[in-house]
Structure formats: C-alpha cells, structure tokens
Amino acid sequence: MLEFRQVAKAYATPQGPLEVLAGVDLELAPGESLALMGESGSGKSTLLHLAAGLDLPDRGEVRLAGCAISSLAEPARARLRRETLGLVFQQFHLVASLSVRDNLRLQARLAGRERPDWTAELIARLGLGGLERRYPEQLSGGQQQRLAIGRALAPRPALLLADEPTGNLDETSAGEVLELMLALVREAGCSLLMVTHSPRVAAPLSRCLRLSRGQLAPHRPAERQPCA
Ligand SMILES: Nc1ncnc2c1ncn2[C@@H]1O[C@H](COP(=O)(O)OP(=O)(O)OP(=O)(O)O)[C@@H](O)[C@H]1O
Image 1 (tube, helix red, strand yellow):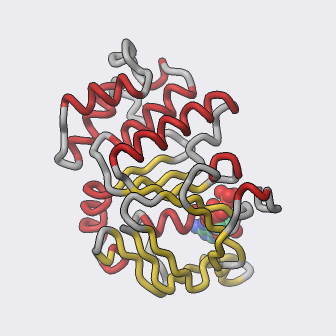
Image 2 (cartoon, protein in one colour; image 1 turned 60 degrees about the vertical axis):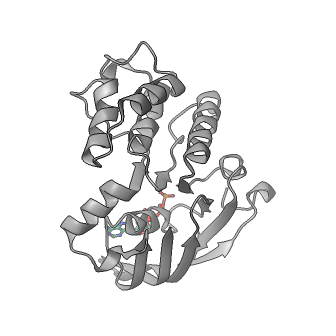
C-alpha cells in the first residue's frame, strides 16, 4: 500500500542542512495499521508529508498504491492523493462555508466516489445526526474532529494518514474519537499510518515504529519509553 525505499530528506537551515530522514525503509500492507512515534522534531510529520506526496524526498522512492508518487509531477500526485488517501491533521482543515453534509460530499465528489448512502451512514456513525446543516464553527472541537475524520473517509480511501488526530481533544473525547476512527478504518479494510505521542493511542494498532536520528525502529508503545 505504502512503501519507502531508502528515503532521505534534509532541510536547509541557517546552520546548514538538517538531515531529518536518513535512508528510511518502510512497508505498510493493505489493511495494516501502523503507529509512528518519536520525539518532537524527529521527523514524523515530514515522513507523513512525503507519504502523501505533499513534499518530495531528496533521495530514494516513495510508492503509494503501486505508483512511485515521488517521481510524479504535482498534478498527478494530487490526483493519486485524491483517489487513494484520506488525510487527517491536528488542524481540521474543514471548509468553513460548507455544512457538515457538504464537507463530506465535497471530499467524496473530488475523488469521483460520491455515495449518498455512505455519506448518510457516516453522519450517523460519527454521531453527527441532526447536525448535518450546521457549519464547522457551530460544532464543538470533538464534533469538528469527528467531521474531519469522516471527511477523510468519505471517499473510502485505501490509506488514511493521520497526524495526531486526537491531539487537541480532552482524554474522554480523544478515546471516543480514536475508537470510532479505528472501527471505521477496520470495517473499510483501509490501511492506517498514524503519528502519535501517546502510547495509549498507539497500543491498539497492529504495529508501532519509532523515528529517531533519521531512522525507523520497531517500538513497543506499552513500555512507555522516553518518546511518550
Ligand atoms: N520547512 C522546514 N525548513 C526547515 N526545517 C524544517 C522544516 N520543516 C521541518 N523542519 C525541521 O525538521 C525537523 C523535523 O520536523 P517534523 O515536523 O517532521 O518533526 P515531528 O517529529 O513531526 O515533530 P512534532 O512531534 O513536534 O510535530 C524539526 O527539527 C523541524 O524544525
């Protein structure tokens, strides 16, 4: 589903190049869920952006759904992203001028996969029934985050990329939102790559890797190692 082959990425800084990924290999199988942990600044968001083709590696290759997304021009990357990926970030990036229902419909339509029955089911599953006509600013933080997750899943993507998807929520809402997201992902047979600082959030996923000094290594989140 997603493959990194010897991916390297550095940023130019006033102090010289900052090497964030130093030849990273990664393979995520269809339906697999992977938690990505690591200290602040270790490069987790960078890795996620490369996976989505929002940025390009300096060396190596990123393959998404069998396509070398890192070798495509931006219009083709954008198409592959629309057709294959759901993205959930800490900032919800909802369309403020569209209602709950239209936020969901827009995303599905952009991917050419609008299904009114699925939109209706999502609204119910997200606990947003009765709020379909509201605008994002008229929702609570937890409701906005559920909508952001629903919007990412509306086109039934093959892979969901999530960056601290419950980072802005209180513990109870975070637990509920996470449970809902994992259930929807499982039912859809969708793969999941999720960045998190929380061992509790990482624990239910099938695998956990830790990014440190530009390299990925297997990690056991339950042990609450220093990255938590
Ligand atoms: N555009 C950029 N230019 C220069 N440096 C950058 C740029 N983007 C990120 N960095 C640096 O690269 C490193 C990795 O950043 P990244 O955001 O990927 O880390 P992260 O693990 O996601 O951090 P956090 O957990 O705090 O969100 C950091 O040291 C950051 O300051």
